[in-house]
Length: 184
Image (cartoon, rainbow, N blue to C red; front, top):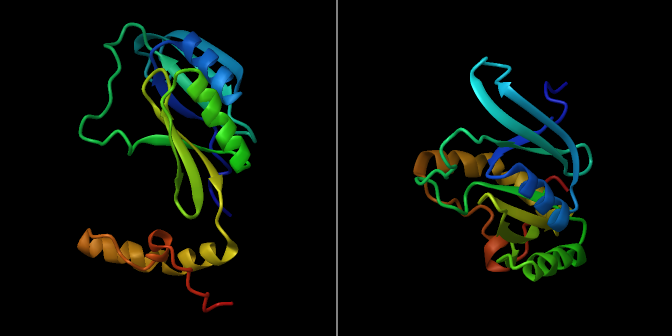
């Protein structure tokens, strides 16, 4: 039995709590479900006023943000490329993905994609606080998933030794078919 049941919430910092709630409602249809405000951090007892907001990301998933008005302006890890740290959210169809792209672009938001990742297609954009978001629609077949499952440890072990991209799943990038599973 797994220790973790599910993610309770994921929390990020935001520049403005009200703007964040309104943006996620408008562009991603997330309901505003809870606000908590304190002048002291419950875990550390540090005096640090904050507004903590919670948004419904569907299926029991909760996305949360902190506005911290007494802290220096938020930035990002300059040693990590902007494309690396992001939150990926699933949509149920290509139509939903394209409709979300159109809604975002109509609001003046730059959108990259759809990008075909073989297993899924995605669009990428930034929220008002500068967090990179991805909306993805799954396109993997059972054969693709089996083929990747069979090579995951070999790929990880090779990467750990060489720090070079293993070629076990080259089919994902070169347009060829995934290998037929040995187990099936």
